[in-house]
Picture 1 (cartoon, rainbow, N blue to C red):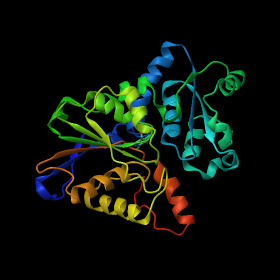
Picture 2: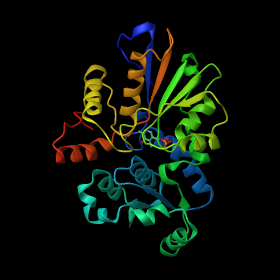
Picture 3: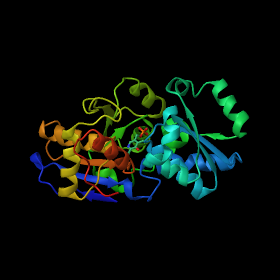
Length: 298
Ligand SMILES: *Cc1c(COP(=O)(O)O)cnc(C)c1O
């Protein structure tokens, strides 16, 4: 569903937001798209266990745990940070995943860096038997195929399609199903310049660009200005944004509109990739630091 952002923008610009956050109550937004064909493939391969990876507040871990429960897979989550083992119940994401039946394998940050190497995966096989591996963030060819279903025929009227970027799978799918007159803008939620190459692995077109000015210091980092923007955007538009991805992207697009980045009469589509489950965990951290929190009930 595309929802109009009812703000009067300069230069006759119009902005709609595609509410992918509403496509499933627990397998949120792009994580639903990214898991879909991976689950089909896992069934095809007769696997009954999914193994995947993520950090303490990972939307992907929450989505994979719920998807496993709903579609009959055992799920194992390899979690970055061995200090989290004793804190599962204090962490809303891990608590949710556990309640869905996910088993955790907590590893140090050092071990986590080696998680795709043969010896690490062999160890997991020894422990859990055969499994279907869903990569960190869920990005692979099946994920990209699922994300090609985000844009539909009705979206051909837009000139710009804007999305948050983590590992690059989502934007790759969007690029593949975009039309030649459209430009796809990606807003990385983290620092680093490996993303262009990642996206080129999966995307077959050149009508895209990464806007790298809106990561707010890096992955999971926020400022009070960003939190205030998210709160204000919710009051004005009743659209909840998450602090890790969609909040930064929408902040960026609004800023670019004010800086006259977009031509007159541009029709802009924002992709709401979900991620709202991360608000609870972020608020716990903000409270501990005595910073303003996100005033959205999720
Ligand atoms: C995971 C996630 C992204 C990033 O998707 P990638 O395919 O990894 O680039 C964007 N938005 C939200 C809300 C996410 O949870």
